[in-house]
Image 1 (tube, one colour):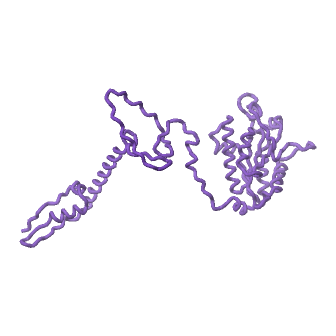
Image 2 (cartoon, rainbow, N blue to C red):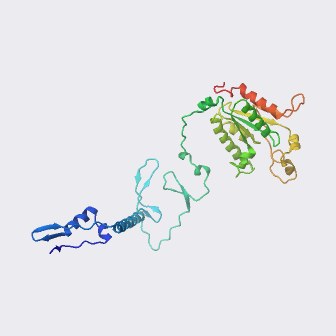
Image 3 (tube, rainbow, N blue to C red):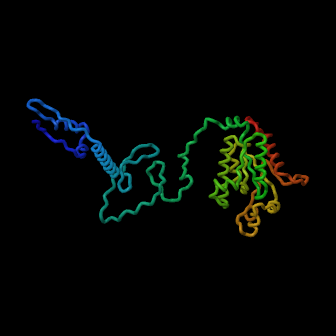
Length: 344
């Protein structure tokens, strides 16, 4: 009769208490049987699917407990207790253990609230205040990836040079009308252009901006940045904006290489613009229903040295049509080499 020397434990806790190899060796030794002088090793049965599932669950539970223990040791009361890393050197410095506090001591002041923004080290919390644009998008987090296709190569494909034509003037001066007439004139010549109209951009990209001086400046800045991308793509970009403040227009001019920013001043008298009043805005402004309207209760600063000045009548008093104004701008661009890739 075969007598079994030991009985295997079936609980998963036994397996977790030793490695897999050790468990197998122990099972081999424990299941050794003897018949007379003949030694026989009786192997334990192979684990079933249910047994494997139970073991896997126990392993996950043990891993979870171990992780919680490590986190509790590493972070005590929300303070990093193990080590801090400095961004400059990358060296690791251990923080000293906090001194014991007696029962009579005053309780420590609560730590200031923090938001999710972190310093460059990733460890230092930032005070809970409204983040500035620099905090939301710090310069250190920006990496400029150079394209394999340069601006000049794009311009050679299009056989033209990118530039920006900035039409400025009072509401009703004809900026958008001339811009779209110029867009058509350029397309007729086989040139690629695009109109960034103030009303259309405000309906989408800048729909969160009002008409305060600060919002007007931000509106112009954003459009200038978009136009800069269009010009880099080799497109002749036509911007139609009131853009009343000289400082904002000059700031946009500074974004572009010399000669690539063509300012077109729509020099139309206020009386003519108010008589047109296609949108009814002058009537609202005069009645006091519309505040801060350019030309009525908000100033318009005329360009000092625009590349092109447009007036509604020529020296002989003849009215100038928008198509004629567009042709004048197109001729200016052609003379300065914007209709070929090489240019001047």
